[in-house]
Length: 277
Length: 99
Image (tube, rainbow over all chains, first blue to last red):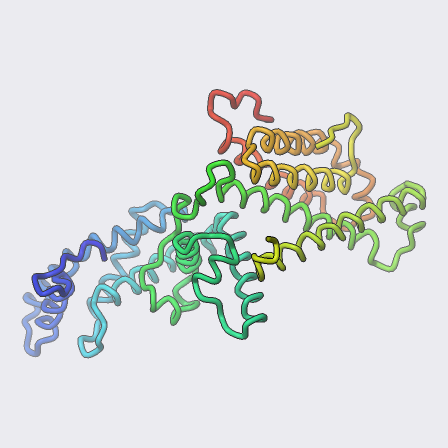
């Protein structure tokens, strides 16, 4: 955590102190009053950690005070269950449990965390680029290769990947998140590209609008023309002539064909950015 | 984006909207946000023009798509595009934003 101050020897003083307190807490024959005092001391030392994590989930719309309360439960569980025998820092373990409790709280209240549309769209593009790279090279892409395929900087992509982790519940994807125990939502400032004329948020919103429209277009075309109905039958249902139906179908198919061509071009560009030059 | 006074059916609206937004993307990429936003505004106006006629759109009689889905999708598209306009247009010039 950022509030860990290095000791003169370079190790994080805060964690050493946490673990010193825990070591005393685990000592045999400890009196109940001493145990309570040490637990209180440990909780007090980590209040800032709970608040810092809770604030990152403010995007859920839940009151931050409620998120902090949920986070305290995670902290208390960490104090009770932390095992000094494992080579893990207390703050790492506590962060996991605090986040887990906060996510459970939000899930209980909302059923799901609301994921901003632009984050969803970017996550879909990341998955597509990962799949395309894997198919071509037989291995997952490095951060750099993935960033190049998406025309993002390494820092922008890292922010988006962190956001994807922050949106995942503790029960899902737990092992992967263990490598980054403290994922947070990306801010737009982190993922904005250098271009001020076409910032990433604007691009994503326009592309999301196009995707929504294209999906609806496909549903209409499927509904109208791919249910075994003849053009005359469709015309009767719509109250228009067979010729008009034919025109609509031709127009829709043309548009879909162009959309597919655009998608194919985008996919080729993502796989081989040089091919466009 | 070409605008007409006649009411498009939903497919025509979508085609025009996708064309208009594709042009907007090109204008943004050419660092011409003013003209890009003009395309975005035209799409928002076209959606607004179509919306009151949605119930009577003959195209939707034959396509098994709930009107509510269409209304919701168009509303989401409109919201995204208005956010784009708000994000690009200085507050003093927002009087021209389609509402």
